Image (cartoon, rainbow, N blue to C red; front, side):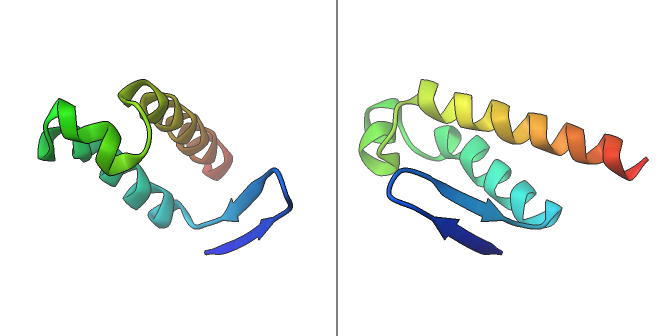
Length: 68
């Protein structure tokens, strides 16, 4: 995994396996902690995490099409 950044944006270059790990971790956190702890632990709301998960899912689907 490599990353680059400027003052406003980070870009992460990762493998499909690394992206799946991030997806799984974010997806399973709600089952591991209570709703009251979620925002404190993650630093984001469930809705914000869901938006990130949607972007990850889209990237993974695009990657599947690229491999075909």
